Structure formats: structure tokens, C-alpha cells
Length: 261
Image (cartoon, rainbow, N blue to C red; front, side, top):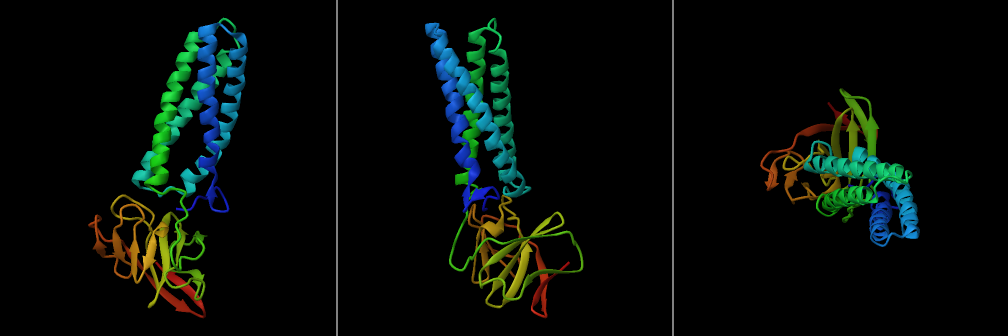
């Protein structure tokens, strides 16, 4: 799914994380050298890198939190993975903040601080592996384009029942989709050759967002593992999913499209 924290479709979080990664690794390297050589100048460099790592980690975390809340599909394996990713990175940040505070005291053991930094780097590496999986396997932050996809569209509404206006009749091109946030439900509005359709945003296999997939010829394909669903009936046309997706009634009146709940 397209990142909510982006610059012209380029997600900000993956850009920013390279800075704390470099700074925290640099902190460990310079502090380890300072410990081995008993070099005060190297230790001071480690202090500067420690400070820079904390600042940039916080900035990266802000963009990460936005993606965690608004981009990662809820009730999915990606959400579980993203939670672990966030907890590991938060723990790493706490470790390096603790190191920065402790290093202000000249009596603190440098060996202890280097040991803490090493633990932090290990945690950051595991979190980085998960982050790579979120992007390259779960496609979080990836702006998927296909023929007739058009621009990414979303609508938030507090209405949760009755006849809800969700689009203009000519707003979507054929095979284009729009993600609707109806209360706590996520519903995809799509336009086919035969008119508008609506179905659950959640793939029944691993919880991927179907709005981030592709819809062609009355079929929507999950972006994660390729399951295909009939957008009118919700039936599975091609696995690995075995359970159909819920569909919703759509009506049109006076040039408007309505979701009937």
C-alpha cells in the first residue's frame, strides 16, 4: 500500500532509517576503537555519533508510526511483524539513549557501554531484517501501479449504516479502486465494466490490503500471494486463500455512488 508519509510517492521512513543505522554503527565502531586504544578523541567522536543517531532515530520513528497506523493493513501478518519491528527499534533507541546519558559520567565503564551498544546493534539488525520483509514481501509503502489504476484514492466517513455516499458516478475509471474507511471497517470500492462493486479490503489468506492489489476484468488480485477474488460475489477464483471475501451492495442515484450497509 502507498505510504501515508511520503514525498511524491517515495516513502520517507526507509529514507530516514539509513541515518540512525549509520550513526549507531559508527558509535559502536569508534567507541570500541577508543576502548582498545585508550583514545579520548575517538571516544568524543562516538559521543557525537551517539547524539546524531538518537535524533535521526526519533525522526525516522515519526514517519514509521504514521505508516504503522495508516499504511500497514490491520489484522494481518504484516501488522504483527511491524509491531515487532517497532518494539525492537524502540528498545534499541532506549539502549542508545541510556548509553548517551551514562557516558556523561567519566566513571562509567567504557566496556559496559560498548557491550550495551553491541546489544543495540544486534536488535537493530533483526528489526532491519523485518523492515526489509515488510517492504519487499508485504509491499508496505510500495505504490503499485497497473493499467487504469489511476491515482490512489481514500475516503473516511463516520457513517456506519444506511445509504452512504462514497463517490461520484464518474470518479473512478474502469478497473480503478478506492479505499473506504467506514467507521472501523475498510471496504474497497471498485469500478468494473459492469458498474461499481464493493468488497472487504482484507484478503482472507494473510490479511493483505486488496486495495493495494490489482483489479482487472471483475477480478481483484492480492498483492502478497496472488489470491484472486471475484469482486461481485467474493468467491475465490485462485488460491492460496480458501475463504471468500464479503461483498456489499452498491447503488447509484443522481450521479452519486452509494454504499448500502
